[in-house]
Image 1 (cartoon, rainbow, N blue to C red):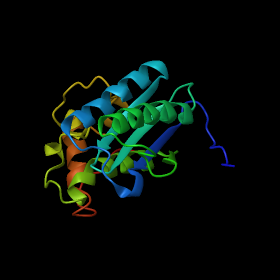
Image 2: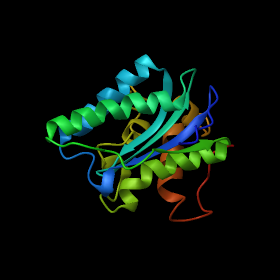
Image 3: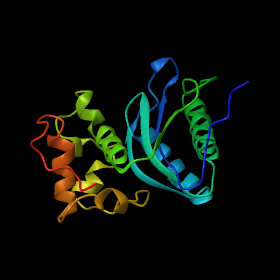
Image 4: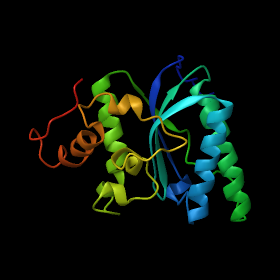
Length: 188
């Protein structure tokens, strides 16, 4: 029997989930769009704040702050719906996601902002793109181009940076990893 996860209201988590056998979770553009639509519907049913996301071909990253719905309810609804969609679309059976999703509790502002950077730099680290804002399936462009996104809550992330926060967040994400110690970090 699985040990139940610890959860408290108003807690932030870095969520990860991988495709079963490390296979792709997203084969076509429509798959990404469907996952995001299920994420929005789940957010309406089980309110939470989404601070960052990145949908890679075979895994996902979400930075979620729960309200009163348990994290396991949020992820169960989201991933069950997506698995049903994916299996039906591709005429498959069985698990779509490999094991349980990963969840790391984020309890410090410095950890929160590092998790956000990690999520947004994932496509660059995977050598899919050289500029994180060019990756379509990430929330990063919404931050640095100041674009409203119906799923995203940017205020907490940007509150850690001086004016103009979008510029300083971009600088933090893109340069602090390459040039340690030369970039102004957030005011934590």
